[in-house]
Length: 421
Image (cartoon, rainbow, N blue to C red):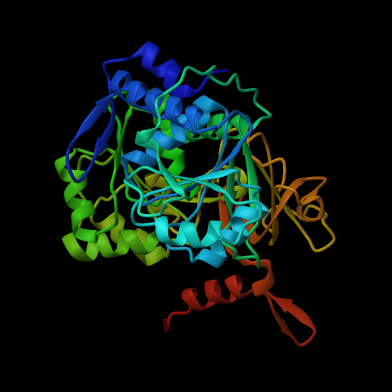
C-alpha cells in the first residue's frame, strides 16, 4: 500500500487537510500532498532512502507534520524525539535506534549537533531552517529528485517511538503500518467520524497521542489543526476560532484549560483525554459543564488507545476508561499469568492487531513483555460486570503489608467511599 496522504489527495483533493492554529494558514489535501512530495524529493536527493531510520528533533508545527508524511512516502522509519532532550540523551537514542540521519530546526540544531558529534560514524544532519553549523545541510538547498514511492506491507515498521520510561529505561517501540491502520479503524469505531471533523492537536508530535490524529485524518478525510505549543487559554480560543470538533489532551492540560476559561466551546464533539489517569473529580466537572470528555487508556506499544469511554459512559462511571476497542482484547491475569475471575484485580494483558511486534533490537525485553495472552502492560486493573475497564495503578506500585500484596488503587477506592471524605 502507498502512503495514506497520497491516496487521500487522489480521493478528495480539495478538502481541507491541515491548519496552522497560530497563523490560520491552511492546506488542502492536494496542496499538502505537493508540499510533502517536494520534501520527500529533497530528502531523497540528500540520500534518505527506504528502510533508513530518520530521526526527527523538531518543535511541533507544520514542518513536522510534513516530515511524518514524507517519511512514509519514502519508506523511511521515522524516529521522533523530544526537542528538549540534551545532547547525551539524543546520542543515546540515536545509537539505540540505529538512526541514519536526523532532521532538526533552528531551535534544536545545537543539541542535535552535540548528539551527532558523540556518534561514530557521524550522523547526517538536515535542517528545515538555515544552518548555523557547517555540517548541517538545509533541506531547502537540495534539488528534489524523482523517487519511487514506498510500497508498504502491513508488517513493515513505520515508526520507532521511545516509551516515556515509566517502567525504567525507555524502550524503542516498533509500530508497523498494520498497527497504525488497525488503531485508526478501532478508534473510529469507538469515537465515530464526522466528515466535517476538525481535530486540534496541542500535543507534541514525538508522542503517539500527537502523531495519531495527524495520520488518522488522512484516512478519515478530515482536518487536523496543529498548535505549536500549549497555552491553556489559547488552546480554548483555538477550539472556538477554528471550530474544532475534536481535541487530544492529557488531564493536566484539560484542568488548566477549564481553569482558564471555565468550560470549552460547544463545537467539540469530544475531548480525548489520556496519557495519565483522569481524576474522577475532573470528569465530574466536565459533566457539570457539558464538556464531552472521553477518558482513554493506551500506551505507545498499542499505537495509542486500548480502551476509551464515551462521554456518556464517563459521566455515569467516572473511574472507568470504558470498554476495550474493536479488535483489542484485554485479559486480567494473576501473578502466575493465569486469567482471574470476572471482577477480580490483576495485571492487564493486551492483544490484537494494534499491539507492537516488539522492542527494536531487544529480543530479551520483548520476550519478557510478551506472554500467551499478549503484551504484559505492568498496569493493574479490573472489569465490572458490563465489561467496563478500570485501571487502578502500576504493578510495581503495590504495597507489601503483613506479608500480603495490597493494591493502592483499591485503598484509594475505599477511602473515596468513606462518608468522611
